[in-house]
Length: 87
Image (cartoon, rainbow, N blue to C red; front, side):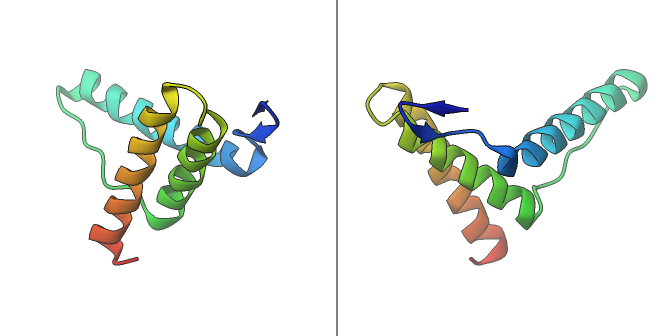
């Protein structure tokens, strides 16, 4: 998928999105079945996928108001990686 010629979603990000949503759904299902559920911090490869994904969205939508939201999420992911993994 692209926007104004800038790639924002490629097969490179597909696994990240599928894995994350599956993980979230499992946590919600556990919560519904048991009355509670947990989720852990993203592992480095998944966090790298998020960083690349939101960087692509930020770049692709740089001409719109949406860019700021994507840029903020991108910067949050970078900060998480730095804080928890030192990179």
